[in-house]
Length: 247
Image (cartoon, rainbow, N blue to C red; front, top):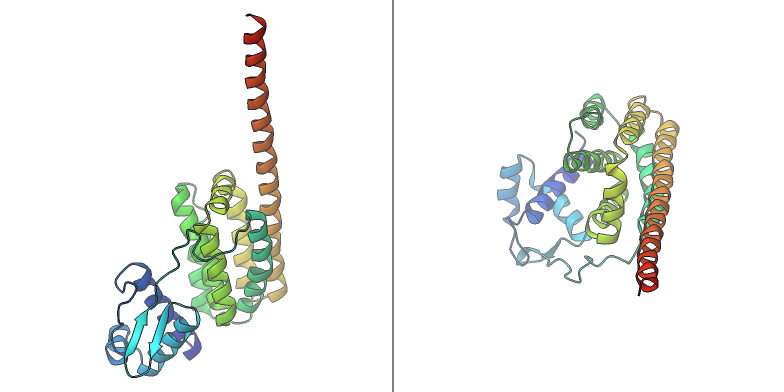
């Protein structure tokens, strides 16, 4: 594993510990030596991982004092803008398509094997919605990590946080993904095959196709929901009218 990818891996592990509550807001992280021993890496790698996490707003490095976990926003939307599922999907088509193109040029055999496991898992027919959603998230975030660009990885991570943490967005994605398992599995396998061939253009196009079809599925679901609401209102008005005429 390259030095750049190693510090990103350590940063992701530290972030997961923070998210899981092992290091809550305000807590002081263990020193570089202790973390280096815990993760089996050099102190330099730990330092680079902490710098990356500070840039992402997870920690504060205080010279002469230590490294402290910053509090997460408590405004109900995690500090995110008020966006729709359509806004988010359009942004994903831009960032994640380029992440796939970058990753295609960086992959080694171990990376391809890692992606294969996730792509094949998404093709299983026995997955619950929660399991499918977890594999979906891991597949896309792994591609972002393998892009080799920490800025691209960071923005893809933020987009996925919005996908999960904004109720209006999460509701649309949940409804569409529940009814869309077969198409989603085929598209993720197509993305994987393009990545495995180490073809940046094919990887970019496969990812774009995935989001274009997802966007169309969202439009259809939204239209169907609107029609169902019209039918409900019409039925309610008919009942009120019939009740009135019987008086």
